Length: 311
Image 1 (cartoon, helix red, strand yellow):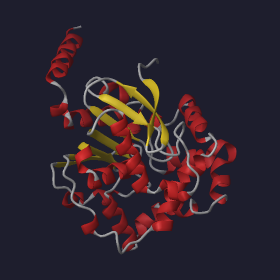
Image 2 (cartoon, rainbow, N blue to C red):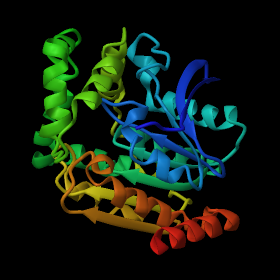
Image 3 (cartoon, rainbow, N blue to C red):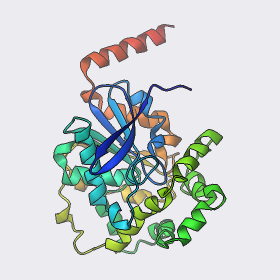
Image 4 (tube, one colour):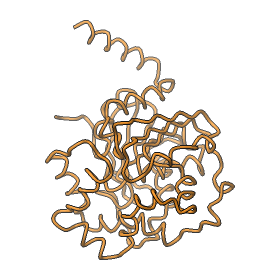
């Protein structure tokens, strides 16, 4: 199937950032998680691009975006500044920001610390930072068991050898099975993921996102006072069969949101909810963002819908 999205590059926060873009209108950023890249959003891009200027970047260290060396280059505060700089490099000061997994963590932190840059916030299977830290502080055993792979990732060299063996077999077993995914990956998709992760430095860069968190964690300073309430209207979508992040991490999120908040559970989807229930996720996002769609675009969409029904 041919798509009209375009591959482009831009300089942002000292990085050469690769992204895919499609559509026109208000800027909507789609931020992927581990171990993916822009391709994570392949099902959402066309539908969202009917109403928005959709930009799906490869985040720092992934696929065609630059891969700085050393774990300190992958601090969340640095990656948040990447996204902030990307918004500005695209000629905007604000954007709708949608993130999944680690992309969701970045989206949360952007909305918390740079509220002026976030028009709307959408997060998919990514808990608010304080909810995740709370689970670790309290030694929540079910979540600690689900997070076993994070401890494996702390072993430089060892983790790389295990994960890259047999064309990244263990990594894809986790991605497309162990974390609750119901959607079998086809051969074309698998080759795209292998190509992206096989780029020099990509696997270590992806693991550095995890390693720097363990190296720099300071549970004393990570208190509610350090995380102002989010002002942007926020939508949380959560696949309940997530094998990596328990449903309990989504509960209680409303107390961290000052703006309008909606949470939707999808009972038959796992961690990669936007790929397992793509049409439903796209519809939820468009419904949440409906008031941002220019009236002229809404009229055209309604007219096109009527024509389709009339056939």
